[in-house]
View 1 (tube, rainbow, N blue to C red):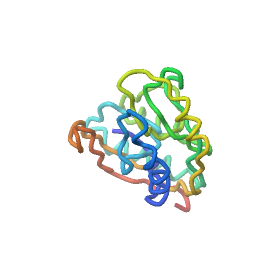
View 2: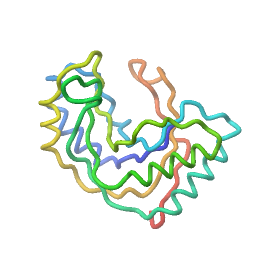
View 3: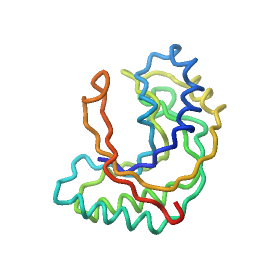
View 4: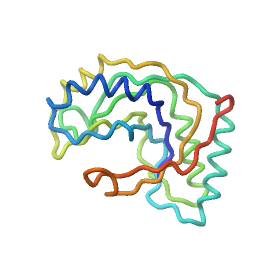
Length: 181
């Protein structure tokens, strides 16, 4: 499971349109546009007994945050553009405190949370082996999507191998609206 911010359909469509004419130029495994999200906290396993506690914690986190605007803009690669394994779109705005609070809620529910350094992004593609994607990062740097309100958290369950071409299938298990969201 993971805690995420999911962009609205019109935002996804705008970025998808931007990338659609360019996808064939890259030999990547592109993520499906309907699965784009900003992961705030990741938990490899959430026991059934922890689910209600996790939901209560995320409801509390959401209830302490006001909705704010963001946009998708720019891009990057992990671990770096010269030897990338992941190509991503950047997300503007402050997500760090929200990610810390979401991770704390996961941990407080007794669930192990992935402790990697947080960098707000949306994964667009994965590479089978490291490659230089500097041109793609520059291309993404020219993109600035429409503004949209971040107004809720989503708790998403990932079903590995159950989606198209054995990709994950995502199921939103619960949403938690922000103040004024």
